[in-house]
Image (cartoon, rainbow, N blue to C red; front, side):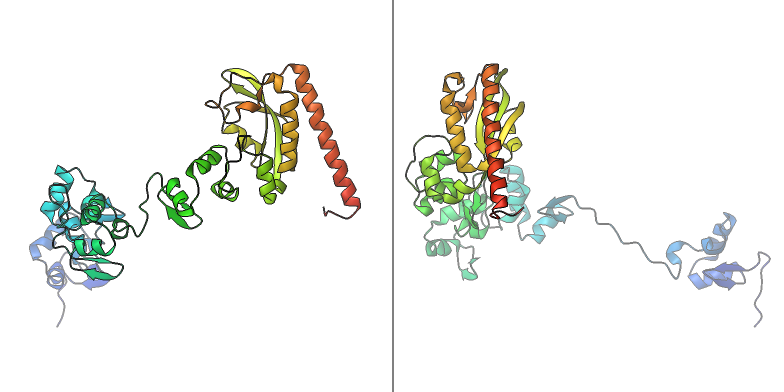
Length: 357
């Protein structure tokens, strides 16, 4: 049958030639009036048919708009969050709007564990360490805990393992030491049967936890961070790389001088205690050699120590001095002399093939 070409001519839609507008309307399930209106508005070709009716139309993926996120999971509404977390919506509203719980906490504790802001444990089953219990009370008894303690922990946002003391709950005081979690440093000392006061004092002097424990539980006296007994007990520490520094520092708006030793970078050591400082000289030796040289300098020039500096202001308060200029030059000469001795020994050892460069 011969196709009738209208006075408006033929039309190409999606690569197909149509003899007239009625044939387009029929093909795409549109009313003839709708096609004519689009034509009269200036639409031609593919535009004669709405995009959604095109045969090759692919609807765009809808972007889900979430109202809020909890632990990285998006939710469209409070009801949506309650459904996905197995929490009764009325219970959630009480927790969040009445008791002032956080979203994380309000959604973390399943329904049945809240009564007037407190917990109820009479009929809630629970699984702990892959074992099912008919009630929280039964599980608590198995772990030597009271149900009230477990519920209080759960209501406070703890996980099941944390509520049953199987894991340490992270706090601002908790920490990890050698792969194990501890609630605080007192907890560590109880576990290791180590005096907490000894550990606390050594940490204040700048020792690490491991260094403090390796020195043993007995108090070694108050000679600063390092002393003879420490080095005698820990040869690795004694032979580690150390630095003795002589620096000008600003303290209490006064220019003073500080002599000290460190295993860290000098910048790291001084910037922790002083807003402004200037390094004058430094010597690199074993930490024990630096200690002996420091002790010699501190004793030799002790009359210049600034006694207005107290332990509350600075850990190394005994190492701060008010030197006259001639003493500063004297100390520089002493350190230069030590540097020359060190270089002479290195050159001698090199020629004796005892070191490699």
